[in-house]
Image (tube, rainbow, N blue to C red; front, side, top):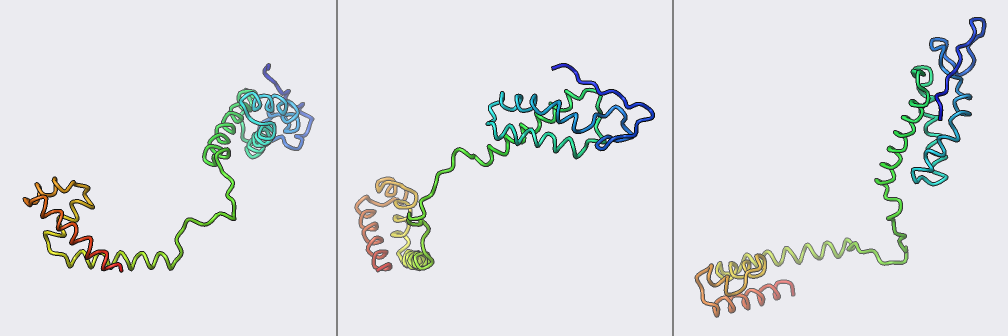
Amino acid sequence: MGVLTFPSPAPDDSPSAGQDSATPDAPRFDALVSRYRRPLLSFFQRRAASVEDAEDLTQEVFMRLSRRFSRLHWGNPDGLVFTIASNALIDHERHERSRRRDSHVEVDPALPVDEPSAEATLSGRQRLRSLVEALDTLHPNVKAVFVLCRFENLSQAEAAVRLGLSISTVEKHIVTAMARLRQAIG
């Protein structure tokens, strides 16, 4: 694509709509649209944009140009238009990545909801409170064995070594703790 130049208006011509009198070398906006619409569509389609996205991106370029039309420097219109097009494409790709358009899965409204009901949540909190209270009533050695084996995932032999107890005693403490906790939650 060659460089597009726009002739300066004759001194007796009045500035037309879409042309700022302060920038006599600026093209008319409709001439800009006519000149760049097809090249922009091709530009976007070559970069894996769908036909619809290419149309939308082309319109976005013209919207960005129209917002700043009178303040733009028109020394290299090709460079200006395609720089704006590249930026619009980057913004579009960033937006698409954030939306992850292709990774959404349709949800069947007939499927059960995985969230617990308010009653189930309240019941769970009450059970947890009962378990914590029951755990606090255990003898310190029984509680220590239970915490090491169930929460810190130590084997009974490792818990026995750490606490200086026999494996038989650790087993009895686990049985005692489990019985008390089962009784607490009913």
